Image (cartoon, rainbow, N blue to C red; front, side):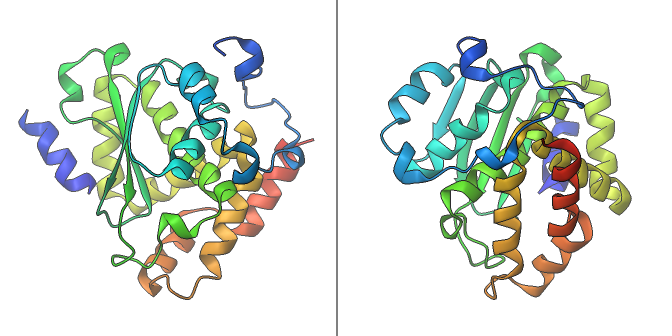
Length: 232
């Protein structure tokens, strides 16, 4: 997916209470208190859309996934005003975050981002609807970690990053593991761990996709270690 995107690019709260405290690398979070059950949040979508929907375009009808987006967003106060959209699309991964095509022609502060969610299980056996609400929050939080990283890069830095990401396995692993760590430091370790454990125990996931995730992402054991170091 990045290869096609890269080619295209060459061619052309509300208050502090709602969003929580500003997150820093040494900020301790009580991860054990954050378990999200859809039954407890299903009626709160209008609230989230009102208070967290600025510059966000969620092109999906799935209420559960849409709400998971906003719940995860609450953990990222840095992204509250960032332009983002979410679309269902047939992709080779479960989820994917990118700057929109043509980002090189816009200023860094005016850049827009998109998250694609795989709409079919045919590609790898991992279907987002099979994840619990809590797990969806964690996996979307991982994508937000990527977007947060993109927002901190100039256009030149982002262009160089993309070229390295698609050509270097070392860069790929470094990027994905760091995204996991950022999600954990933003209080989503438990959600991430639940989703990863489900992934590892899901026999419908293709062998190739399973091996890829083992190679480039944090393992359940590594996530637990990171949580122990970053959570109270």
